[in-house]
Image 1 (cartoon, rainbow, N blue to C red):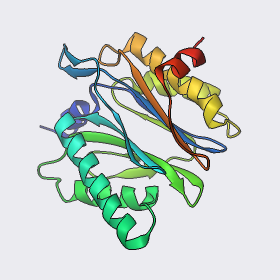
Image 2: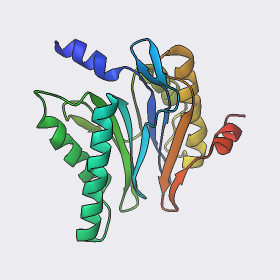
Image 3: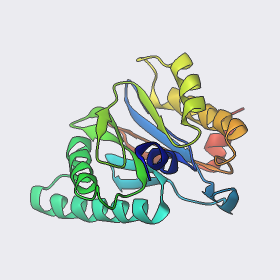
Image 4: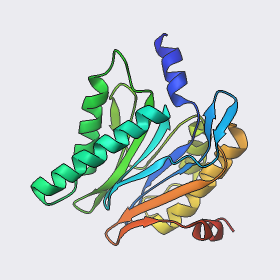
Length: 211
């Protein structure tokens, strides 16, 4: 498998979006899991809470991604016991990056977004399957519907956006991706992290935002 084919395989099967806001950070994803053209599940979980100040979205191989989620949760719990505080997004990203880099010969087929607060400051990271990552100052998206989603988010982005305002735009970006990408669809999950705490939006709240 050459590099181009490898990355195409990693990118398939979802849309995830993250936005840095004036009061925090927000991330969301659809809930469709696919196996080539077959829709394997309409209730896949692609947004995971690691702590009250840290969350991660997944795209790519489900088994690989869920293993990394479990590993990161364990590492966060150990760090919390030793240091009395959760892992920062920066530290969590460095840890995941090292794991991915150490497994280049048999890579984890994933593309991840790590988001959260670092001493109250919102941070957003995009991590590829080989451990490379970028710190995003505005927004990012992963998965097969990411190009469509990014086009919308770029058109509306403002540094003054609050998480409550950005929530509507993340949902709209996912809805647009669903219309253009067959591997993106079904439900959505949306979470935000601010100084007020961790918030997971209910279905009713998301429906009201889209009206």
